[in-house]
Every structure is written in C-alpha cells, then in structure tokens.
Image (cartoon, rainbow over all chains, first blue to last red; front, side, top):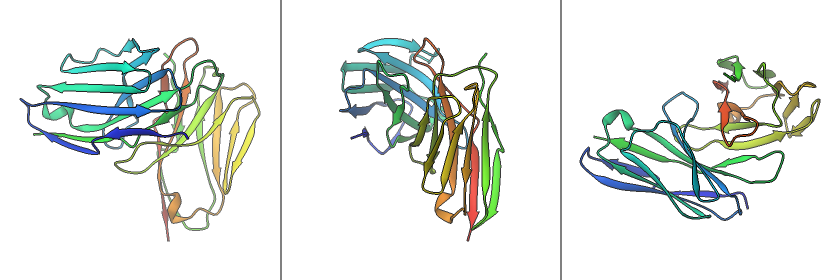
Length: 114
Length: 111
C-alpha cells in the first residue's frame, strides 16, 4: 500500500476563516511534507516533519501552521489567508533508512481563498 | 544551488509518435524519481532510479539514470492520449529531507 490520503479534496474559505487540511499515511514513513503548487508550476516545499518533529520550514508565513500529532498524521492549520494563497496543497511522505527514499504524494487539496 | 533542468518544457505530438524528456543537473544524486501529474491531482510516482546506468521499463515508458547519477531521461514509445500530463523529475538533496523538482514537461498527445 503506497497511499497517502488528504482531506478535504476542495476547500473554499474567506480571509477571516480558520480551517485545517489533513493528511494520513499508513506506510510507516517517518518523514512527511507539505507542498504548495500553483498552476503549471512544480511543487514548492513548505514544511518537513521528521519523526514527528519539524525539520524544515521554508520561511512560510505564520498564517500557515503545521502540526504532526503522530507518525501517521499531518495537519496544516490555516488562518487569515490571502487570495494569493489559493493553490493545490500537497502532502507527501517518504521512508527513512532507504537509499531511494522515494516520496509518495497524496491527491491534494484544492484551496480557494475569497 | 542545486537545480534540476528539465527539457523540453512543452511537447505536443500525435498519437503513435515517440518522445524523450530529459532531466539534467550538475549535482550527483543518490536517487531520482519521475512523476506524472494531471491537473488538480497529486503527482503519481512512475519510477525511482538508484544505480548509475540503470534502465527501468514500465510498459511503453523507459527510464534511464546517467552513469554519473547527474541526469536521467524518460522515453515514451508510441505515445497515447492517456500519456498526456505534466511529467516531473525529482531528487533528494544529500543529507537532507529536501527534494528538488525539475521545472516539468507538459506533454499533450493528440488523437
């Protein structure tokens, strides 16, 4: 099983709303990622968690707040977003201790900020 | 700065034609992945190549990792409309959890 799941599939929110994106994997992977992808561009890394600790924050604005409650779950809390934050948000995971360290992606959440 | 340069950026071909996409870097990588992505969906893993000179086949797709592990190619034989999508190469920066992505190749196969 190489599945990463993400909910919701689509999300529309106002600039004053608070919402959360959720990601789950049951492959035993210990590294989990959040990416932002704009149309016709490659994914841009936002955050990396390794063994449930934040390992990389790519200077992401504080209106995005990641959380890793356990090794299988990854959340992205959203607050006071801007219209330019509208994008496809992708979650991914990869396995530790393997030379290939292949990254597997979820289907994404299409976020629209009004 | 480590970069993955992908070419061509766009490709529009007729069904049945062959094509090759390239992913090049001046850096050495321990492995490299190829993904295909459709609009509004997450990238789907096609292959991981690990060994220099390695060739992997997935039906009509052939992937090669350069001998020096700095570059890779994806060759599609007899392209079909179902091959349409964005093709991305990606590689892990050694000693980190950070992956870098190529700029992508947008392929359109016309029936």
